[in-house]
Image 1 (cartoon, rainbow, N blue to C red):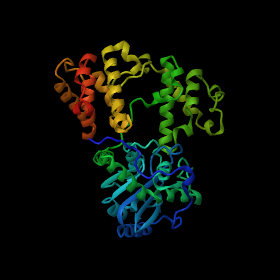
Image 2 (spheres, rainbow, N blue to C red):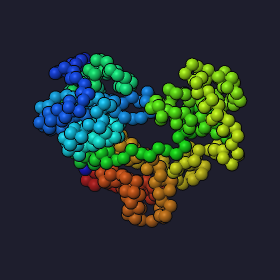
Image 3 (cartoon, rainbow, N blue to C red):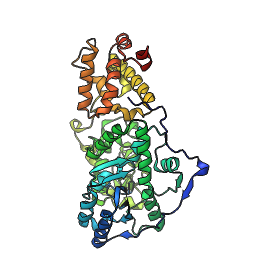
Image 4 (tube, rainbow, N blue to C red):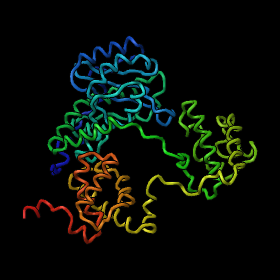
Length: 438
């Protein structure tokens, strides 16, 4: 089994030696805005070689949707391309026909893949440099940090959180966007080399494929309960006001494709739930609601408050949040001390495994899956039975929870031992390399 004796293997460059990368070597390419330009770009990419560097810029915090407002592509022998997908969304078929068969290289792929998939762009293979860096044991896995560490260049950052739905896009932003893929292919090779030296290439390949195939999660139930400041409310009727205002805001935000917080901040929703305004004048006297952008929606907001006020008690939301899975960990000791003890031992075992292989514990196995296993995954098994039987049950549970083969190979033995009673765990732990040698 590979052990990360040198998790940060690779070329290490100190801050003082990093060469600033202020602009793309070939200059900032023009933004492609027409079907003919996209078709020409597709032909040039097809004539290139090797993997395709891919990035996309969204307008998170400004828009409701997660759509891509700029696509950056780079391939050896073809160069860099910047595509505005808004005017050519229906004309990307020539591009998809070329790039969907290639290996894509992205940094934090799960952020951009959904928006690209909406445009019909889906990779045949994937390499995620950010995730690869995590598996290789790098402490800092941001794009700029990894480029500096492995390639000795300093990327100028600063526009990732900008409103990329802005048109026209400023030249400085386009320069930033082009730089995001300028060195991504070279970075991929360095990360792949580090993974290979640590014997983690196959593990990384399983993770990349998992990300490539995973569909975006369905929206969680009762998302309104995530309203900031809701914890200060103590009455069900107040929670109903939050729910009605949150729903009205979400409907409006979706229709206008505007981030909900830009239509009505959470603090205003909580303030209305606390004050219970009865008239438009009382509503507008509250913070935010009296502003010029809010006044035209006053009747909508007051109607939401009125719906909550007139709602029968049977329709009011529960004061306690329903849980899809185990309760909060801080309640385990009171509700199920045995499960709490199992979780403590399981976390310690996974922490030791994380240290041994220089992989963040959350990448070794989903923490939520570990919690579910400790809470209810052993309901039908006698933990005093044979450790081999418990290991088989743990493996089946983790498989059902979408754990990858490499994760199960590492985690099942230590979890099976940790989930038994403390006395049994001590005798059932897998032997270390030193004890096997003895």
